[in-house]
Length: 240
Image 1: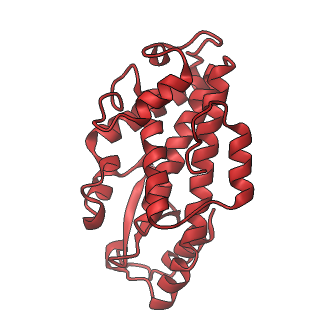
Image 2: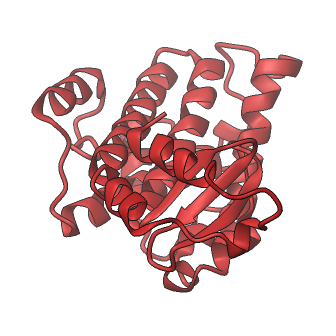
């Protein structure tokens, strides 16, 4: 748990009994303390997203299909968390999954669990309402990739080293495939069933990279060096 999430949880735990979460406002001191830790929380989630993505691409090249699907899902999971933090929305747990929107000073229901977002709530946050990563298409792609990850973990539907049906469409060379998804400015592949397992996390991590650069936020040098060692294709590794 990041310091931002821990402090948000502590703030929420001060809610008086009988007061609903949507009528409880965090103190100015709490908001200030949480805000001061957001960059560290962002960097932590962004690094986890980029490392998961790099490990997935490397694993696919080595025929480790099941493990790579899990890593692709977690890249999406951490990318979305980082996107929220960039937008001053802190996910945290305090007897349930919650969100703290710093801009409106409001607590919101986060979802059924940390892996099951309350997408409708996210889309109602004014300054994020038009973000592509909160669209219904994005939700469907995320949930489909989560199903693939659950299939790996619980029903053993992936038979390594054979590529699963969700991975067999498109260019067999992963470097070329990465470039196709990277350069897909019109989201042609992002949500397609036969492409989204790689295309969707690629679009998320690259958009996170762009937003972090716009905000002048970078990973520590040691994180970048490690990502470059894991990255297995000639193109630039995201977030590096």
